[in-house]
Image (cartoon, rainbow, N blue to C red; front, side):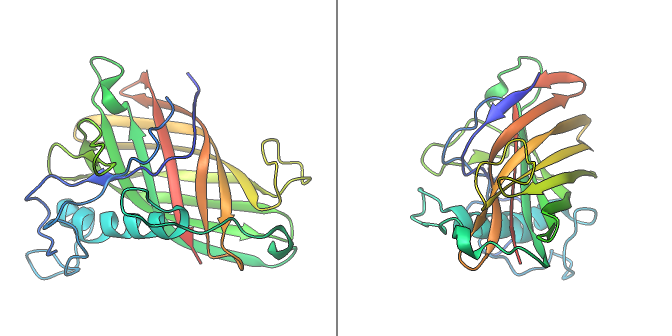
Length: 258
């Protein structure tokens, strides 16, 4: 079943005391996933063994020290966060959208499936990872990917922080989401784009962790942010999400910078 979601600020909240750091339905506006105090606030960049954590070696530390604070920072910088007072950036001025050249962006992605356990018998899962996006302004195309996902089962949205709390230490969700068939700007044959500073792209992928398999595919709409361009942020789209073969509501976001 295809679901539609709109503008939101989604992120995760780490399970308190985990991670070792130092410090589709319509998505709920203002919600996110990130670390609690003492689990994510910038971290030292290393796990308890003194090495930089990865999704494979220490997913809980990777989430709390790298992915969660990175995702929150990019999200706040590009689209703002009403819970922290971050204002974000305006969309790129039409006249400042390039007509030639290429640009590469890197940042973070978020996938949520079955928030609020809307489909009984299936878990609610939220995961965050890294994202890349390459844009060719000469032919108005774009492609990329999202990978290195970590996270897990989530509880109910915390309306005070606007975050979904993880109910256990973050684990790895191997796999990736391909971002393809990107189309930049209105009047370039993009079926869903209505502005020069907007793009659309298809996405599709499978991720598995904790005994659950998540598949997601659909199309995102994203805005170019800042003048000159300082990033790209998903603003909504359509999605078909499944957990273990069962249709559930979901949403997919990425926030990337040059």
